[in-house]
Each structure stands twice: as structure tokens, then as C-alpha cells.
Length: 326
Image (cartoon, rainbow, N blue to C red; front, top):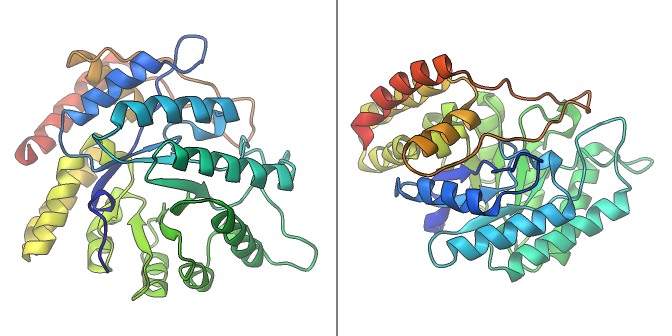
């Protein structure tokens, strides 16, 4: 299978830049993107991602950031846009199912019109099965509906902490992988057996499996994956790209050493969103630390702000591990 270049190596789950009042900071977002582009190691940008606080977005927010980022990266780098309907991940207050799907279709087609490389949809925890329908049947129905109505490539995103009964079964993924525009998906799991079974389910199919946690990239490469979307893909994309290059050249001990470095960076991480925004500012790309709170939702919690001491300590580890790959 020919895998597009932008679906190989590091795909950045792009952090969202906010103003003090919680609104989107267009200029700040563009500066942050310019900082990320300077690494020359990110192959595509995923906006309205989990780390970008996707559950705080409205329809207008999603269209707003899509316009800003697609215009800024036009001709520079591909953009993937989170296009699920509006929901704050409060399981006690799920949205109207028809409206949720309609919003997803609208956002997906809007993203495609802007020139996005794909529309990304979370596994539909926002929806409940119809009477007599299982969760897996509902997931299959949902993606069949989305793919039939969105005029472009569709990707699935299974976020960390997805409810067990909403995790996509390998059998379900195998069925969906036959849909022409169901192009690929990110699965945020560290479960080796589950990863194996998902990749086995799409073996030989035109579906691109994307590793959703950088600690699994070594494993994913041997199972046929070629791309990763995780905090390492925005924090240390050079290391993930080196893993792919070394794997292709047969330097498997080099792949292992790079995985060690990626794991060390992850293991010592404080609030990586704050860290990278502070690091961008230090490098001359002023990026404010303002955020949006999710604390009103009993199922979500806000990240602890980074301290100056944490920043300085982590920066030393980060730069030491990253240096051999620059």
C-alpha cells in the first residue's frame, strides 16, 4: 500500500493558543505554528486534537481555527481537523444524536472545502446505541453515515480514556476499513495485544493505522504502522522520524535507542502544553499560556499549570535527549 508522506513519521496533535478570556488567539496560533515548522520534522498538523482541548470547542471555534490554520499552512504542510459534533464529554449530558451527526458532517465538509487533508472523528462516545443495537453496531453505523456524507478522507480517533464498551473492536475496524474514504485512524492505547489485533484486522487493507501513543511506536513499526500522533509527535518529532528511518534501514538497535529517548522525555514530562508554549516563547515565538477550563465537567479535569522550577528541570532533560536527533 502506498502511504502518503504526510501520514508517515510525526503528526503533531497541535496545541491551541488562547487569549486571556478563553477565545482563540489567531496571531498567537500562527506564531506557535511557525515555531513548530522550524523543526522541519512535523509531517502534518492535527488541530482540534485532544491535547488542543477539543471538548471545549463550539462549531464556530472549529470553523474559526480551521480557517486560520489552513490559510497559514496552505502549500506548507497538510492539516487534519477534528470534526466531531459538539460535546464536552460529559456522559451524563449526551447531545441530541441527529444534531451531533449533522454537525460532524457539516464540519467535515467545511474542512474539506478549506483544503484540509482529512476530517477526524472520535469514536462516538457521545451517542448511545438504538434499542437492540450493540455499541459496535452503533460505531459501524456512525462511521458509515459520516463517510457517506463527507466529501473527503475520514479518519477515526480513539482518545485516551475511551470507555471500554466504546473501544473499537478489531472486527468492527476490519469492516469499516473497506469504506473507500475511511482512510486511517489514531488509537491511543498502550495495550500491546489490542494494538496487534487492530493492526491485524487491517492487514492488507487500504487503511492507515496511526500509533496514538509514542511509547508504542517501536511496536507499531513492526506491526506495519508508519506514523504517530502523540505528545512526542509535537514535542520531539525528530526522534519519531529517526525511528522510522532507522526501521526502514534495518537499524533496529537504533530504533530501540530512539524509543528509549522518547520514553525518557515522556516519563519526566510535567504539563507539556505549558512547557512547549514557554519553550516557543523563549525561542522568539511569543505564545501565551492562557487556557480554557474543563472543571465544570465531572469527567474532565484541568492540567496543573507548570512552575518555573518544573520548566527549567524538564528543559534540561528534554534538550539532552533530543540533541542527538537534531
